[in-house]
Image (cartoon, rainbow, N blue to C red):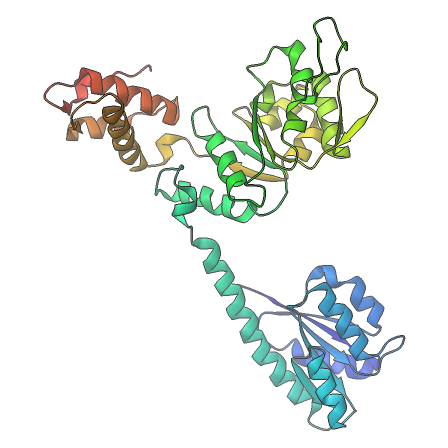
Length: 390
């Protein structure tokens, strides 16, 4: 259930206490009282939804405080509580952004209570709409990630939440679950979409070449350095770098990577000049990095730096009927590429596909379907045509 956070700013501590006790009787609210405006400003990081402001305050008036609050977050609802009844003051207060103006008289407390109660309904409705918006996934944006299972939709919602920010993302999951597809979906739906997307497979590069591959080198930096080379981080500048199989990186290079991530700059091998970077980092691994940290094979500080936002991909056997959807997709693609006629999958073969545990996940499924298409007689894949590695 959503909570509405309410701030009260009132230098009259008795009146402030009365207002606080009154508003705390409302449903699903969290009320904080401040006798000084600076104290309120220091606590804005708690993100209040509603602020009740006394017009006459020590150090600054209510209008000035409201403007500072609005500069912090335009969506905060500000209610001015004042003894000023002049029409020009009231009009000016509304022009400056107040949602309501309560005159201090015998009805002030009940009028403020009613105003806050109505605003609580507005806040609750907005929170509900935001929640529903988070649940809606635009499948057209993520058409490379197939599946309608709850597990896949959960993954897409996480991508949707993180794609517009610059936070580092760690994608985990078994081999063949589609970690690079997730990284690409994040990049191509982000403000960096028109900038480079650079992939580095840490497990595919010899250990003695990884540093040069990532950070580049100057001509003559080592025996085979016949010319300057731009590293992958520089190549990805203003875009996204995808560090696949990050768990394969040795400890020495982990230290250097951590420095690059912290300082947001890179130094080529053989150079003393630092190059500033604006790169979003998405990393992926099929290893249990927590276990790797415990066993001393992965730096704990690098792990927490990379795991700004975690997306865990489900194994294929947890995705239900997505197996059937993917099978048909791979089968149609294979038939088109190889100029084969339409091929279908028998009920028995479909059931076998659904019960297999898929240790190789989507990658294994594609290989099984392509082999079965070759084996199939009479344009029908039977259970006997399915050959599993395990």
